[in-house]
Every structure is written in structure tokens, then in C-alpha cells.
Image (cartoon, rainbow, N blue to C red):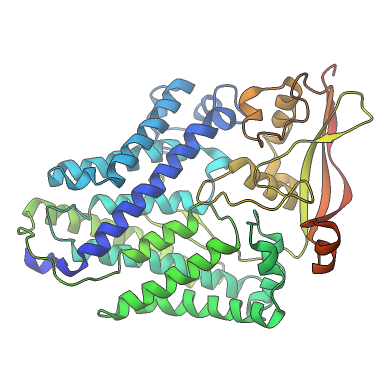
Length: 463
């Protein structure tokens, strides 16, 4: 079935699959290192308690069969090993069916984690990784030419990611229409990076150029993905450059790298000889999956056209076809919830997070594509206490107990009570802003902060 082949896109497939395996590796590593504290049997939101309220069809996961912290760790570390092997080319060194099985196993293991991940896995890039991973199953390996159908489905996904993000901005916060959102965004984004201070201090005309260029790329380049080559490659290049700009300006877990991965699939490098004819069974599977994706695309496509567009929503429990978007609104002020402990109820010391602003002279770090899940949820908690419902009080109690798994979510030097847990803990709200150039030169501080008030009542060990 040569009419299904896209031999000229073999390089795009190679880059796409190796990069996707790398993203999978980061996702599984994040689960392995953070899962016990967040989701374990004694975690902040235990998986067994969640599964007691969910049926399998609502949240398909192998953990419905059995859950233990050891099994969760085994799934996560197995995913790490498998992703590393595929990134090294293992799926290309086995028969086509075995290569598909490797990609399907990666997808199934990660789905099992996401579907029990609750609020810690409620981010759009989790569904994006699963949808992308499902498409990778039907992209084949080095034993067959890349299927045109699957490549078109990947571009359809990238189209929805970019256009969804572009439309949610235009329909959402008026500052995107006025090109002023970036006056605030670099300072108030969930997790600033090492260069965010400088991005925030760019002249305002350049911020307007940033916003305008974002609209052009997110709403224009995706259409060009469906042009003949080299038009599709040029469009993909524009998307990659924009995503790298975002990588430099902040920490957005693997969202940017996964978008880059999708764009790499559009790279064409000319026909590569040597691919045998596409097996009939493989062609049938590819076409069958394409029909399924088209059927499931109805609701996401309708969502794109809706004036009430949803941002980052899944319409099926397998996360096969989803809707995406980012920063439909931009906060103007940055608030931070700080957790503090005290031995005597008089002197309070702050716990230090890895990615959240804390000490004023501490420069923001680069963590992406690694995902600091607790740090991200703390940012949401500062926006609205509703985001912290169900896990903030347990978190404070873990600090009172000196729980080692929980403390490992903090910076290495982030526990101000390394020997004896505090007698009291509380949460306090602060207003943070980047320092001005003059303040930075005078004090060496990256941040300035002012107290806002209590955020959570004080908890004590004797109460």
C-alpha cells in the first residue's frame, strides 16, 4: 500500500519518536520520585481512597486490580526503563508489531498513573502526552515507511494545541487583544525561570511584539502545517522557535517540549529508499484508528468553535482526543502561599520549595521539563483556596509529623526543622513582585514581598 507511505518524512518520524520517548522518561521519573508523597497509601490524596469512589470505566487503570506503593513505584520505574530504551532506538530494532507493543505499553502504564493522579495530574500536558503517545503506536518503526494518515493526525493534534491556545487567549483576557498581557505574565506565571526577571524587564513595546507574534504563530502557522513541503517544515520551524522562547522565559513542565516534539514530525528530508511495502494488517490498523480519532474529534472541534471554549479538557477516559489551551487569563498580581513552622509559637521559619519564589535573593531555577507538582498546585492555591481543598491541611499535618516523603518534595535545604519537627505550622499569604533594576543593583534581590495575611489556621501537635 504505497499510497499510504510518506517515505520523505522518515527523519520527522525519527525525531518525533525519540523526543517523545524522552518526554515519557521525564513523566515517569516525576511519578517515581513524587508519587508516594502525593498519592501513596499515606500520601496527601491516597490512591486507594480515590479508587474506592471510581469505577474502572470512569478511570481505567491497572491499579483497580491492586494498589500498593511498591506497585506504583514498579510501574513508574518500569516506564522510565522502557522510555529510555525506546529513546535509544529499541523500538526500531524489533519487528513492527513488537515496536507497536512497546509504544502501547508506554501509553498504558502512563494512563494508569494519570487516571488515578487526581488534582496532581489535572494539567493539560498529561492528556497531551497520552494523546501523542497513542498516535505514536500507529506511526510504525524503521521497518516501514511512515504512514501519511498518522502524520496527518499528528498535525491535526498540533493544530488543536496551537489554535486552542490562540483562541482561548483572544476569547479570554482582554489584555491579549490589547497586546498587554506580557506586561504581567513573566512575573505572575506559575513558576518563573532563571531568565524571567529579564523578560519581565524588557521594554513594553517588545512585550507587545511578543504578544502579537504569539497570535500570529498560534493562529497562522498551524494552518500552514497542511501545506505541501517545504511549507509544513517552515510552519513547524516557527512553532519550534516560539516554544523555545517560552522555554527560556519560564518553567512549563514538558508542555513546550511536547509541542516541539509534535512539530518535529513535520520535518521532511527527502525519500529514504529501502522501506518494504506497508503490511496490509498495519495499514488496516492505522486507518481504523484514524476513523476513531475523527469520530472522537467532533467534540474537541466543536469546542474550538465555541464562544464558551473549554481549556484543557478530556472527553474520554482514555484521553485519546482532547482539547487544549493555556493562559486564557493572566493574573496582574503575584500572591504566594508560604508554609511556616515554629517551635515556640513566636518565631516562624519558612519551608523552602524547589521552584516557588521564597528567599528574596534566590534566583529562580530551571526545572522544566521536570514537573514540580506540589509547587504548581501551591501557585493555584494562591489564586483560589478552592484549589487547595483536600490536600493543604494534610500537607501541614505531614510537616508537623516531619514526614520524610513529604519533606523530599522540598528543597534540600528547605526544611528549617531538620532535627525535631515544629510544634506549630501555618500558611501565610504574601504579595510578591520582581524587583526593579535599581532595587536589584542595591540589594541583590530578585523579589520584593509584602505580607497579605493568614491563609490557613495554625495547626499544633498537641491539638
